[in-house]
Every structure is written in structure tokens, then in C-alpha cells.
Image 1 (cartoon, rainbow, N blue to C red):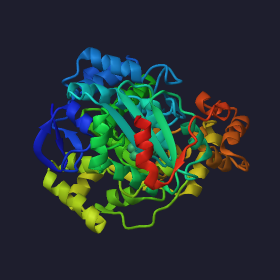
Image 2 (image 1 turned 60 degrees about the vertical axis):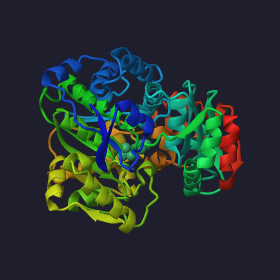
Image 3 (image 1 turned 180 degrees about the vertical axis):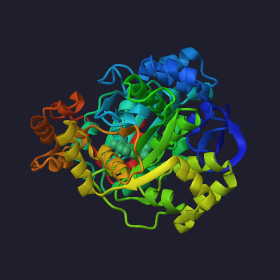
Image 4 (image 1 turned 120 degrees about the horizontal axis):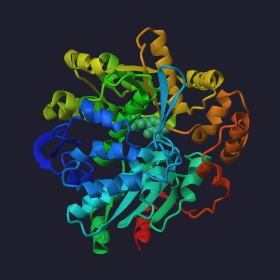
Length: 493
Ligand SMILES: *Cc1c(COP(=O)(O)O)cnc(C)c1O
């Protein structure tokens, strides 16, 4: 298997090169040239495997230049006792046909851990295979969740350093504390005076500064990012769709070979795309239901074939889905058309005009695999309350968007069989909105609300969130945007 860019087929690279580079040179995203298949017999075998083994089986064909032992070691390190549930990605069933795939048992209590516990190790192995001698310094600008998940993933990984910038006053209390108390000898965190855009622009400016790159190269370092366009972040996510299917079979809710629908709270389209790839690999997936919040650009796209980002940006209770440009959609368009010139044209139009139209024929094919829906904050909170009242099960705002969209789809008679709701965060990451949904007061700092939600529900908070208040703050620096290169320079020593 080789990898090529969604915007031009000419250059083929190895898996290690695709992961080392992140973005292709023509600005496209790397995709494998073929998708391997999993037979019914292999799927049956996977049902009796622990999570780690299921990931090994799925990742192996995508990483031809990695040995079995290397892949085994990567999976053991990524999915071990860093998760607080031995099943790693358990499914919580609420009735005879509905289960919630819990992807938040990792160190930061959100689904980004499923990829970011794997990516750093995969990246270091890939760099070694490519003959890279320098150390890699990961720079991240974050609006909250990704920064913490990247810090946890890269903490104390040999040959790496990670520095995270966040907007001063622009992240929640809990998110800030999660970052500034981060352990590890190779990590750094710094606030930026300004908003998320200021932090991100500052990071992008450093990435494109050739003189800066030359200077740190002399000291044995180069810069890289950990964002979700890297193939190494998407790949580990394919495995949990297979795993969820096995759990539905093991529970007796479906028979091997039956179709299973998935409903996925979607932002950048990475999570749901991994589900579509699983389907292409032979997993009996029915419909993939793409659930959005008020930022419903994907709902419109799936219904009309027109992607149009020229619309108001809404700040919602599900902030990790507040996105107007879903970058991983580019990979779906490539896989479905195989036409990199077309994809490049659509992406150019999105950049210059803010919209593109894939046409009726492709829209129909997309509609064959995907359904879509969205809901606002009031419905999201209503759903949290309903699931708590009817099932005694606590869900976060992102999961609630998907849960609500599934309920609406069923009410419309458009979904009737088994469905897996992909649950992307612990309710304790979004205490304020969850408490409000349950009709409770939210008049206290974020860390105090953790205790309040525990008291109200009797559901135990994840240890790493419950213990936040007592942790030592390691990073209290703050810089103006123009000071960011200096912070990176000092960090690299
Ligand atoms: C990142 C994130 C999402 C969106 O996932 P995509 O892969 O970007 O579609 C949903 N929920 C939570 C909690 C997230 O952190």
C-alpha cells in the first residue's frame, strides 16, 4: 500500500512518509491508494479479542513497512492503563437497539485521546523510518480540547517536545487547569493575549518562517503539528467502529452480518469518515448519520450537495463541533470520485468563493451512505435531561446532539434498526451545560461544578478531572502574539 494526495496523484509515498509530513506538498491530504478488506470470518474472530488486538488487526495493512512487533508495541502503549476502563472503548446499551460507544475513557476524558494516544508514537516511529535525526517540536494553538489531548499524548515521548498556546481567557476554567497542570519533562503551555485566531495566526506565522526553521535546525529541532489532517490521527479511529460492531454482536442485539447504523457528532468530519472507511473495508454498516449543532453546514451539504461556508458562526454548548470548514470531507470526496483534479477544484472554490457544488450524481451517492440532521442548544439540553430521566445515563453536550438527531430520525420513520451513538466526551468536561440541562444551578467556578454534578447524579467523575483543583500549576506564562517565536526559542533551549 502507498499513499497519495487528494489533490494530485503523481507522487506516491510510504505510510511513514505520509505520517511524518502530515500535509502533502500540494496542500492536499494523504490517502491510501487502496482500502484493505476485513472478511466476515476475520470480523467474527475480532469479536473475542480485546480492544488492543482489534486495533492491531485494523492498522496492520495500512502500515506495510512496520513489523508486527512494532504495531503490537504501539497498540499496547496507546491503549493500556492510561484508560480508566479495561474495555478502552466500551458500549453502554440503553435499550434493545441503542448503544453509546464511549470514546472518553482516556486521560483527557474526550475522544481525541483515541487518536492522540497513538499518533505521537506512530509519528516518532515514522520519523525514524524516514531517517530523521532531529527532534520534533509540536506546536499547537488550541481553543480547548485538542491542546490538552496533544499534551497528554506527547508527554515524555522520546525525541519530541510539545508547546501549546491558548487564548488568555478564551478557554474554560477546567480546560485551562487541565493544560497548565500538565506533567512531563518535554511539555510547555503558554497563554496568548488575544483570541483563538490570534494564537493560531501566531503559530502559522512561526511555521512559515524559514529563518526560524534554520535557526532551530542548527539546534537539532524541526517543527510539526498534531492536527486532524494527519493520516496518523484518522487511522486509529477506524478500529473503534469494528470494535463497536463486535460489542453489538456480543450483546446479542444484532447477528453477525446484520447492518448497524452509527450516529456521530461531527465537526471536522474525521470521526465519521473513519466510520465510512470501516464500511468500505467490509464492516456491515448501514447508514452513517452525521449530527451537527447550529453550525449545520454538513447537514445542508449532505442534503443538497452544496457546501457553503458563507454563514454565521454560532458559539454553542458543543464547542468542539463549532466548525464551518470540515477539512476531512476532502478525503471522502476523493475516495468517492477518485478524481484529484475535481477535488482540487472544489477546494480552490471553497477558498476563493466560500462554496462549491458536487452535483446531483455524487450527492445521491453520498446520500446512499450518509444521513444528516442537526439541533440547537435547547434541544441538546432537553436530550441530556431525557436520557438521564429515562435511562439514568449521563451524556455530554456533543453526545446529546447525536442522541437527539437519532431520536428525531427515528421519529420521522427514517431509522428503525440497531444504532450506535458515538459518545465523544465525558459529561464532566461540560459540567455547566449539563447541570443546566438537569435544572441545577451553575453559579460557581468550573472545578466546583464537577463536585456538584457528582452530588446531583451520583455518577463518579473521572479521576483526572476530579483531582484538578488540587494540582500544582506548572505554567503561568502569557505572551503577546509577537512574542510567540521567542517563547518557542526559549522552550527549545
Ligand atoms: C473533536 C470533537 C468532535 C468532532 O469530531 P470530528 O472528528 O472533528 O468530527 C466531537 N465531539 C468532541 C467532544 C470532540 O472533542
